Image (cartoon, rainbow, N blue to C red; front, side, top):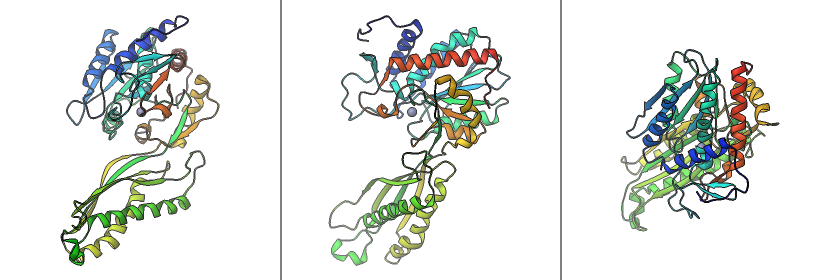
Amino acid sequence: MSAHTSSPLPGNVAGTIATLQRLVAFDTVSSRSNIELIDWVANRLDDHGIPVLVQHGDEPGKANLFATIGPTDVPGLMLSGHSDVVPVAGQDWSSDPFRLTDREGRLYGRGSADMKGFIACCLETVPRLVAARLRTPVHLALSYNEESNMGGMRRLAAHLASAPVKPSACIIGEPTLMQVVVANKGAAIYRARVRGFSVHSSLRHQGVSAVETGAAIVAFITEMQRRLNDAGRHDGFEFPHSSIHAGMIQGGTAHNITARDCEVLFEVRALPGASAADIVAEVRRHCDQVLLPAMRAVSDECAISIEEVLDAPGLDERGNVHLAQAIMPLCRCERPGRVSFGTEAGMLQQIGVPTIVCGPGEIRVAHQPDEYVETSQLAACLDFLDTVTARLARGDLALR
Ligand SMILES: [Zn+2]
């Protein structure tokens, strides 16, 4: 850490920064293991005598963590964060992204905002949670792979759904500048694979170009957006419709060979309540009924498949009305927000856990080079968690 600080920081802020420094130093890019971070957190909670469940992932080197502070036979408030971060490859950083660096009240580092800052605040609050002798417990949850396929929360949610006690509510600390977010769009990713038939392009009538079919799929997707614009509207979102977008296309080997293979990677961000699967069914139908018959007329080796890479549901504000009302005054939020980025919140709502999103830092800087969280945001989050602790201790915080 470089020395900055004109006036000394309150002890809990300084402690949080030290914890964040440690968390950022674990390189938990989603393609790598998160076990070292999970073990480190588990040991730290263990030091406070807190029972910790480390749930190993469906792939090696990955684990979720779930801990309960307070009684374990009563449902409580879950504070949840993902432990993984997006890659730094190809990004131009002013300082080492895995070494937290303080420049004028901004703490730079990969994951500082998204979302290790929130995790650090939660860990700093643990001793006070323990001392409060809560009757309504607080659950701490850390997941893996949020930034890739959301497999961690899918696994944890499945566990919680069948556990004897399920959390009564959840706050996910994605960066929202400590404002309550009550809705987010779904996040679904699909890969279309096209198999064409290769011939020399001088004989193109005997071949099928997978690249041309891929382009036809992209054109269909582009056209579909116009229909989605007519199909539904939610003015709470900056882009008020469900969206579909082709982000990558790859195929072919030479200008004079009809391409055998082509892949199109596309995403659907469905409005809460709308289903990405329904939207994609239209793309499938077009492939099966229009594109494929024309290809098969030339060669029966041709094929089109559409594979789901990820389908995370949106967060629907009809499911968290009471929780939002209870939490908004505690973080001085006057108007609940809605965001277009995907979160794990919808998966928890699906298992009957009302969930909102609220955490320190800004989504604007997440995933970017020189990602940072402001010290003042960490302080605001600590204040918020202290208030939550006090209210849970008094037993007058209605979570649902
Ligand atoms: Zn995030």
